[in-house]
Image (cartoon, rainbow, N blue to C red; front, side, top):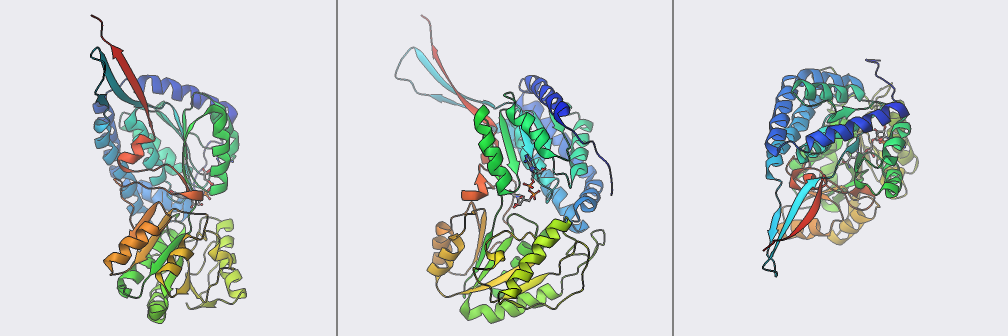
Amino acid sequence: MIAEVADCGVAQAKLAADNAQRGFEAWRKTTAFERSALLKAWHQAMMEAKEVLAVTMSREMGKPIREARGEVDYAASFLEWYAEQAKRVDGDILPSQHPDKRLAVLRQPVGPVLAITPWNFPAAMITRKVAPGLAAGCSVIVKPAEQAPVTALLLAQLWQQAGGPAEVFQVITAERPAAVSDVLMEDRRIRKVTFTGSTPVGKHLYAKSAATMKRMSLELGGHAPFLVFDDADIEAAVAEVMASKFRNGGQTCVCANRIYVQRGILDAFSERLTAAVDELRVGQPDDETTQIGPLVSQAGRNKAQSHIDDALAKGARRLTAEREVDGFFVAPTVLADVTNDMQIMQEETFGPVAPLIAFDSEEEAVAAANATPFGLAAYLWTRNLGRAARVSEALDYGIVGVNDGAPSVPQAPFGGVKDSGLGREGGRYGIDEYLDTKFVSTRLDG
Ligand code: NAD
C-alpha cells in the first residue's frame, strides 16, 4: 500500500454536485482569457511537479518510471493546448432574410461535468477531459479509478496551487464507484458525463444518462488490428509494434491486439519481433531500465495469462523464450498460428502478448480487421500510397495509424466507433463536447 484516501459515498457525491453547481455559476462568467491564464499556470505547476507525479503513478499502478515521465508530459500537453484553445471558442453571425433581424449563434458551456477515468493513464485520462471542460467554462468533478486515486488528488492540488478555484475542479475518490456515480447520474444539475473505461460500464452509464438527458462522451475498449503488408519496411514495423503493443505492459486501449502479417514476410517479421521481445527488460517499475513492469492487479494478470494459456491449448505456438515471472507479472510473449476461436482474438488482452495471424490479400486483411464490435484504433504498414489510402478509408475505426504506431497528440481527435464509444477528445473537436450551441434571433425596434 502506498497511501490511504477517502472512501466517498452518497453524502460526498451530493456535496460535490452542490459545489460544482456553485463553481460553474462563477466560472462561466470568467473570460476566456482568464481561464486560459489559469490553465497555463496549472500546466507550469504540473511540469514543476513532474517527478512527483511520475513516481506516484508508477507506484500506484506499476507503470515503468520512464514511461510515467512521458505520461506527465503528454498529460500536461492538454493543459497547454486547451489554454490556447480557450480563446478560440467563437460563434457566428448569420445572414438574415429579414432587414430588421439579427441572427447570432453563441457557444456556451454545457454546465457541471462528471468525468470518470481509468487507471491505465492516471494523469492523461484526466487532463484530456478536464482541460477542455475548464477551457469551455464548465466545472468538473473527476471520479478517478480506485487503483490510481493519488495522481488525481495531486492534479487537483496543483490546480489550486496555480490559483484555480476548488469548486471548479473537484476529485471524489470511492471504493464503490456506483454509489457515487448513481447520485451524480441522477442529479439534473450535472449536464454532461465523460467516461473512459470498459465497454460494459460505458453502456451502463449511457443507458442511465437518458433519464436526465445528459450529454455523453464514451471512450471505451479497443481491440486494435495491426496490418503489415509485404511491401512494408519490416524493421520499422517491428519497432512500432514494440512501441504500440508493449507500452504500459500492453495495458493501453489503442495497443495492437491482433497483428496480421502478409504471408510472404511472415517468417522474417516473426523472427525480428521475437528477438526484440526476448530482449525486453522485465523488472520493478522504479528501475530506470525496466521496460515491462507488473500488470495493475491480480485480475489483470490472470486475464492476460489466460489469453496465453487458452491460445496454447488451442494450437498456438509460443515463439518467445519462456521466462520465470511471478506476482502480477506476465512474461512478454509472441504467439504464432493464432486462430479466430482463441480468446485473444475476441477480447482486449490488456497485457504484453502479441498474437500473429497470416493473411494473403488486402481484402482479406481489411475484412478480418473490421470483424469485431470494437472500433478504436487500427494500424497499417505499407510503402504503397494507394494501398495506404484505400485501407485507411476502409478500416471501421476512429483512429488509423499509417506506418505510425503512436498517433496520439493533443491537437488530434481521439475516440472510437461502434462498441468503442462516441465523442472525441483532443483538439478543437474535444472542446465541442463541452459546448452547447445557442441561437439568438433579435428583432430590432424602429
Ligand atoms: P472500468 O470500466 O472497470 O473502470 C473505469 C472507471 O469506471 C473507473 O473509475 C471505475 O471506478 C469506474 N466504474 C466502474 N464501475 C462503475 C459503475 N458501475 N458506475 C460508475 N463507474 C464505474 O475500466 P478499467 O478496467 O479501469 O479500465 C480499462 C478499460 O478502459 C479498458 O477497456 C480500456 O480499453 C479502456 N480505456 C479506453 C480508453 C479510450 O480512450 N477509449 C483509454 C484508456 C482505457
